[in-house]
Amino acid sequence: MWRRLFWRSTGRPTVLPWAVAVSVLLLLLGPGVRSGLSEAIVRLVYAPFYALHYRIATGAQVFDENSRLRERVANLEVEVQRLHEDRRENIRLRRLMEFAPSWRGHAIATEVVGPLSPGSGTIWIGAGSTRLVATDLPVMTEDGLLGRVTQVDSYLSRVRTLWDPLLRVAVYDQRSRVSGIVEWEKGPDLGMNYVVASADVLVGDTVISSGWGGVFPKGLLLGTIASVDTINVGEFLEISVEPAVRPDKLEAVFVIKPSAEDFTPDDEGKVP
Amino acid sequence: MTYLRWLLLAISIVFYRVWFPDGPPPLSIRLDYEFLVIALVGLYRGPTVGTIAGWCLGFLGSAYDPEVLGWSSLLGSMLGWSVGMLKERLFLEYPLSRWLVLWGVLLIVKSAYMLFAVGVDPGLWLSSFFAGGLASAGLTATAGLVVSLLWERARPRVKDAALASMREDTP
Image 1: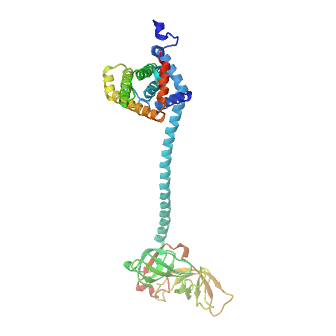
Image 2 (image 1 turned 30 degrees about the horizontal axis):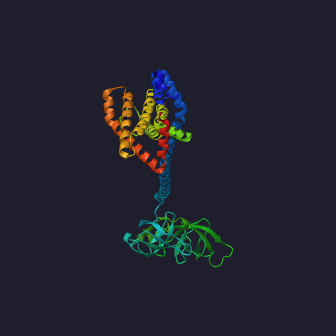
Image 3 (image 1 turned 120 degrees about the vertical axis):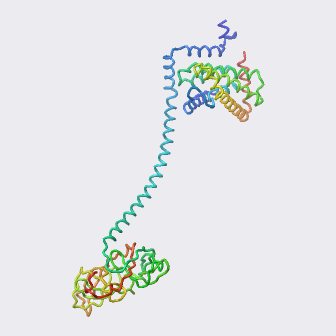
């Protein structure tokens, strides 16, 4: 009977009883044997697929993490740029705090919105009549005198700077009290004109506004004497003044509203 | 079926097991991929090949779990054999009849598998049966029906080949 169950009359095996028998045999094996058999199959067959699965799963995580980190880096880059800008602003504000005002009026702080360009000695600033800016008011930076307002709109004003040939400033040599007129002709430096040949002017002397023109209050810093031509001396000296304000670093400026006292010649042009 | 196809089938079962492991007891609704493959082999290759494939694929599919080692082989061989036998004896050209046969056989096999997986606990087995067994068998049967219809549509001569194979297997 058992033979007929597992073998056909043709001699070929009947598959199902064999399969059932082997399965039952497997089930009857002890737990240790079954565990060993299972472990062997897992090592041989499943292990590469588990490794692949792990790699793909972790690869997907790495991809996600990479995307998140890229996004974070981009945000941090923006943050770093912002912090750099804040740092520069902080330095500028520190310098402003240390900046001793040389006039008795008050100042309107604003920014340059239209910078100085080659061929033009004027700039545009972001304050106009709405902030009580008026024509002919002096404009400064924390380094010194920059120019004066020549045109006022509601929210913008045009400033004629020291590098405009039409601007002239009455000045003193702060040490020797020698007076002259500062105006620009060419190049980065300014010229101090109408100083007689015998005047006591030395390189390195500080040049300040004298207040005589009625536009610029007395005592505003313009720059220092860069050179004095003592060879080709005629009636007047040829004096070059290095401006205190750098034309390529114009950012925050102040429109000055001086009081009447700023123009009075009370103490020989000393800074108040 | 070439050796490459058998190899791909085996790899696909291992892959499925690795990717979608099921924790005992099987309460959730899931596609029983290895049962699906065994049923399709039985459907197209007859009871003898179905039995051998069922045993081998069942063994391979449960090899990672020593508790069910042997039991899945037994159920797999029964599944392959029964689908092959029913295919020979019943007219399964209508989708509904084919689906019903697949569902019935898969339900029996799935129920037997769950009975073993829950440690022959009748209460847990009943809850597993209603919570996941019925629907899982239905899902697997539907997938089997769709795959078989697509397979026959893609390769019209597969029916003739299957019938010829069955004639060879018939004693």
